[in-house]
Amino acid sequence: MKANYHTHCTYCDGKDPLSAFVAAAENLHFNQLGFSSHAPVPFENDFGIQEDQIPNYCQEIDNLQTQTNVCLLKALECDFIPGMSTPFQQFKDTYNLDYIIGGVHLVRPQNSEKLWFIDGSKREIYDDGLFQLFNGNIKQAVTTFWEQTFEMLETQRMDIIAHVDKIKMHNQHRFFQEDESWYKILADKALQLIRQYDVVMEINTRGLYKKRCDAFYPSTEILQKARKLDIPVVISTDAHKAEELGWFAAEAEQELQRCGYGNVVHFDKEKGCFR
Ligand SMILES: [Zn+2]
Ligand SMILES: [Zn+2]
Image (cartoon, rainbow, N blue to C red):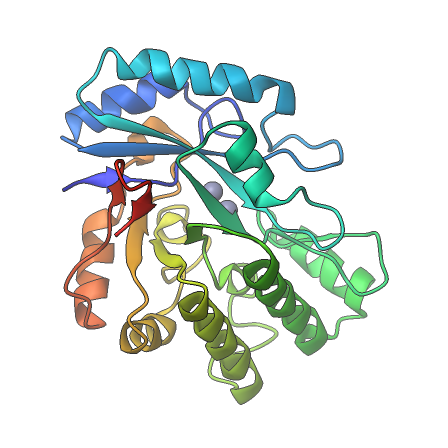
């Protein structure tokens, strides 16, 4: 069973049209391909799908399905921003999506309208946000990221949680270390909630092939703990170009085996869930 459930096309910030990903999936002998455009957020941006384009996105996937043996799935990668983002389930119900990926890319400090963008290609944006929104207090900034993740898990319904420790990407071992006890306590709590709410965790390869990070999301220690908690996993390449569809998937499989995982889960179209 070969699949990728985390895929961005030209409806959001991806660089290739839907059809190019389907062709690439055929070449890779995939059984399933799930599209997960960034969901709309309530302010102007250049990364999310426009809300009025979602019906076209879904229709185009349906049309492509008539021309391929790869099972195509419709999803969105929804951003959780406290007090700002649309409930994930609303997107799923309105557009009859197969599943939802939930993630945090924009961290909202307490009592602020401003957002700290922790993703993207520019480390300077991460550093500027850290100093301007959190006075350089890395512990407070990182804790806010994790607490936003907890709130997402506690208040939103999602099938997969995206790149759970993305906060480490632009840190690059500079401001905090992942083996500090306060950090480990936060990551542990996220895992407890993932288990409690029965969410699938992805092992995301994008940081490695974009060379923005020297590890998978999440790191080995988090994966090992997730295995002990029996948290189900999928392998995600988070592809933004068709050629990226299978990048580092084999390495991710090896990493999962090293962490004790015997299998990954797949989407069951009849049941409408991962299992
Ligand atoms: Zn993401
Ligand atoms: Zn993504």
